[in-house]
Length: 182
Image (cartoon, rainbow, N blue to C red; front, side, top):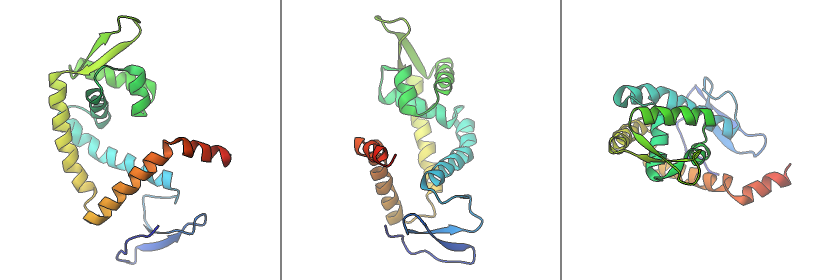
């Protein structure tokens, strides 16, 4: 893996991973207290969500996670709670609270399954579809701020790498590789 050249200042250090020998530039006073990729991705996501959540709440009345579930429902009308809990990656109790909030705000609606009263199908209301569009505009605006330090080429590279890693970690090959390293 090659890293794009960057300006080195007194606050920047070169870190060479002991495991892979890869070079990474990190700041001495970095948010990252650990070089592990999963740790850094998690911290990056948590920090960005925390910094943006109040903006979303102020401008839409919804938190980022609420809007994420709203988008998932809008993308797959008729989805169930169990499906949402799985694809959102949220704990079941959090998913349930979010669904209740979205129902109370009349952003989604539910329809009971004719086959099983315990199952209900979710879909977006017209108000929910409008809220999703508002959330998208805010998200686009804030993502530009988040990625401001990156050039267009770096952003394209980052998106490509994330897509490849996403495909890999959700593949059967990855699961097999984990079992063989177990």
